[in-house]
Image (cartoon, helix red, strand yellow):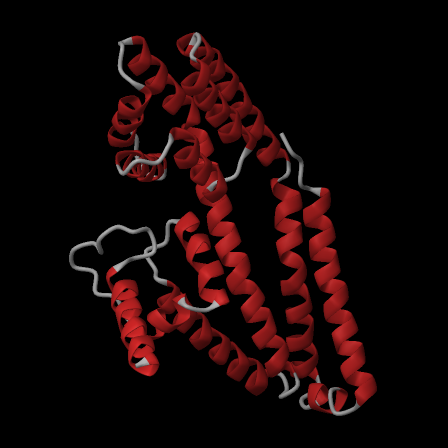
Length: 292
């Protein structure tokens, strides 16, 4: 009886996971999901539970199973190319770099979407101020903003409106939004909305003042990003310089990389060089990161 109950529970759980998508919304028409079995298994693991909210924050139309399958295929391809073009020693190194690149891609996509959302915050605050001044409730104003704004603000506010529709509080729904797209500007806006929902007050005046402040911060962020564009390009050129050096050495002296990585000293030297290139990349990125 215990085995029967356990098997039945697992079957029901697998069927439920299959019906639910990452965001709890139905699948878009015309989009057939791939790797369903892998996706079901992955969602039950710690990796899948970490990967699911990260994919939701990026806005990519991918399930954890699809992303894992594509990432695995890319890592295998990079491993094979590095082993054939350079030396067998560089295969595992390229595979690790591929895994890091996949995670970095998700972080970059999330940061890019967050930046786009921040640029829409002044318009969002203006719409909420006009709606509340017209006498609409905050929940209704959020739903109206979700319909009027384009992605990503429209999509994210649509999720907030769906949470509010099923009984979540404003604090919980907006808290999930700040977790998906963390930024100082959004935290200030959410704090203003939550405090006004709790204690009341002149929310219209606060939102209008916040709109002006967000416009100024938007221009400041744009100027800082323009000033640091050269430094950013330099940081991303560092890894390509190292890869180009390896290809140049192997072209001028065929078989040099095989002989170099054939000994322990050569492998240590290669790993140290790769570590220094990675350290240079991280250092430049950290020095050029200015919080506005």
